[in-house]
Image (cartoon, rainbow, N blue to C red; front, top):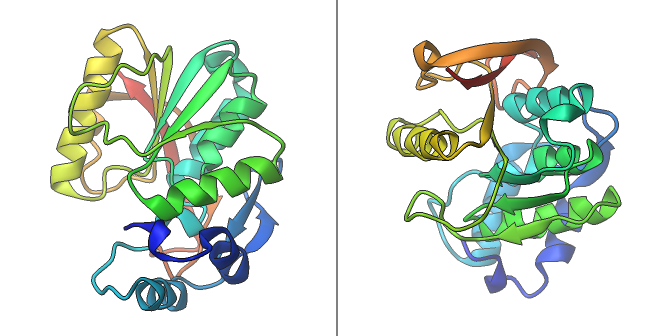
Length: 220
C-alpha cells in the first residue's frame, strides 16, 4: 500500500486516529483508531483500491503491547544496543526500545502508512527512530542489530515461516531475538522459550477476547 497516493498521509492519520496511552504500556502514546473497519474503508477510498491489508498500524496489538512492556521492565535487553523492530506497525515496540535505552532502533515495515504512523508516533513520544520500507523477508539485509524484536507476526502460515527463518538467521549471527505473541496459530512454541506472560487489554473488534494472555518469547 502506497501512502504517497494520498496527498497528505500525516493529515489522514491525524484525522482518523486519536493520540492515547497504550493500555499495558501507558508510558507510550500512540495514534490509534476507534474502529478498524471504517478506517479500512476510508483508506481504500482514499487510495482508490480494494482488497488492501488491514490497517495494522492503527492499533496496539497484543503481542506488541506485551513486548513493549517487557522491554521497559527489562531494559538490559536493549540498552546500549542497535535494535531492529521487524514489521513495526505503529512503532510501539520500537518506541519502547528507545525509551528503554537502545542506542538506535530501525523500524522496518513494508506498509507505507505504517511508516508514516511510526514517524508520527515517534515524534509524539520524543524519540528518534530510523524507519525503513525494505522487505527483510525478501533478501538478506545489512542492517546491524544486537537485538531483533518481532510482535504479532505469526498469524499467516507463509509469512510466519519466512519470518521465523529470518529470526533464526539473526540469532545465529549473535542477536538476541524477542517475540511478542498471544498464541497465534503459527507461533512455533516448540522452538521457543517463554520469558514472560501478560494479560493484555485489546479490542473485541480485532480479537476474540477483551483480555489476551500474551507471551514474550526467545529462540531456544
